[in-house]
Image 1 (spheres, rainbow, N blue to C red):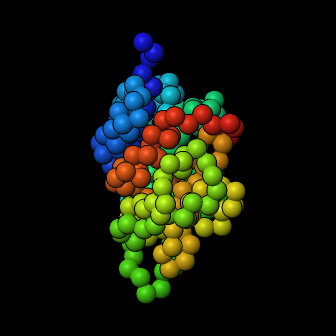
Image 2: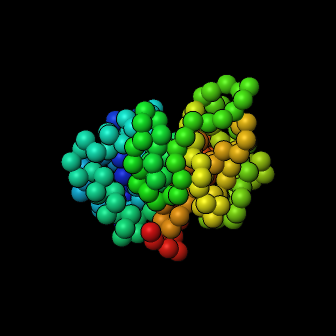
Length: 218
């Protein structure tokens, strides 16, 4: 029997760890894939994983500091991504993929996706955006296959990506204007919405992520 696909959910006190791990395992089961999921802050486990999931909730700066506070953890993520390991960032985990965040000052991100994380401009609408929103799929990609017509994701955020490049955008949502909802470049991808809370759509995206064989590496 083939070795199970190893999935590392990165633990840096960024929130939603257990729900992200459960959703990844459920997605594997539904797609008939043999997988093991661990919640870990061990650099060696992250480097050795077949897939990396970085959840996140709260402020960009706090999450960035949380990663830096665990010796070797951020470097392990960078090393794994450099060798081609597929990576998925969720909510603030996606935001950390950008060049910088502007919440509580200027904080450096991974720099994988062009742009910055800035306050949303949604006149007349409640912030944070909290609830279901329709996803507009912008280009075909293995990660968005099989989502059906008018898929929806569950959002909780008041900051969003801006000044990015169109080629990295897989999906957007409308909340007082276009909001980048899903990004991808090389072997790294991210969702501004919570896939672990997005029911059938979220499980399908996670299943696609587990099956994803990126054609390029950062």
